[in-house]
Length: 128
Image 1 (cartoon, one colour):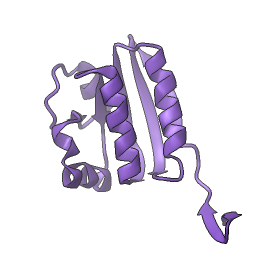
Image 2 (image 1 turned 90 degrees about the vertical axis):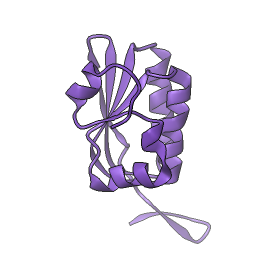
Image 3 (image 1 turned 135 degrees about the vertical axis):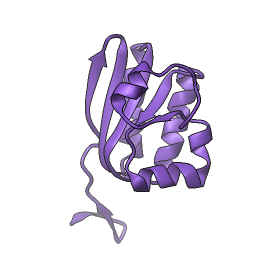
Image 4 (image 1 turned 60 degrees about the vertical axis):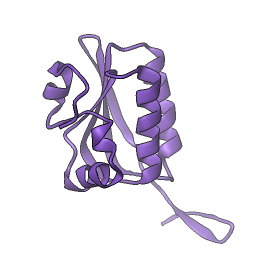
């Protein structure tokens, strides 16, 4: 079920970050499940910690993400702003996540690659 607060049921969510891997100076942050208002702060804190380590590149692996809302997309934009123009790349979004990026227009501002490997090797900020 979930936690009850002020007569509302707040659904329990797994932590959105499954893991963080160091790949030759780049960090790959593996996300999972539904990323939305209920766990966006956990995502924000995890990305802030990753950014504090000053990685050469931060790749967000979206292959296990089932849903993303506008709050979570805002967290990704914040991370990109902190890292600079080519510091953040998104990788392997499923159809629903890709659709959210397209509908919001963010695919023009956040580079998206089909795989983590492509995100690690691609240079420049052009989104796909």
